[in-house]
Length: 192
Image (cartoon, rainbow, N blue to C red; front, side, top):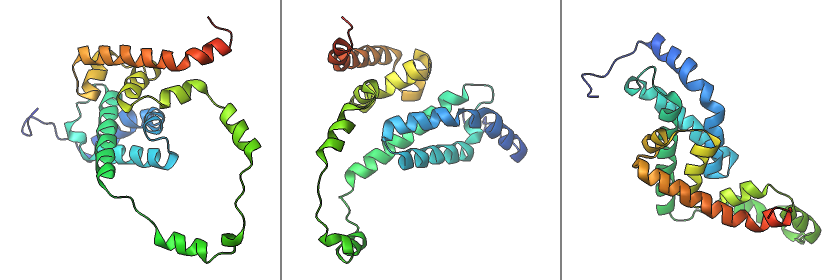
């Protein structure tokens, strides 16, 4: 759709679309963002950035189409852009934080590790989430979109901007990788 063909919404229409078509998906957006970032604050920031972009570019949204898929695509692109930007930046050290620590009373306290706590923490956890989170982001993303969010292959292809055949093969490979990672856990739970 060219700029001349693009529909211009009034401010009232924009707010209506935002409230009725975009906001109902905020929980799914947060869950997807969290599964990509593994950090609550980063996930919230990513969702906020997604909704800001969605409102800013609302004129390019076709009312009545799949708003959830449109939002997921914006979120996925924002995540990839942020990831690329951060991977090119050198590591940063907050010297103020280091100075504060060394000037505090805690600097002389011995740091001990309670191995009992660490051992129990390692034993407790959702094995499926751990296995899913250990997958590469491309594989993790297709499983989240298909198996957790219920998108069709066609919708996933649009969100990820890849051919449907690639979606299918990536999903097949991702499921096999997940199955391999969960094999020992399944056996320990009595499954054959």
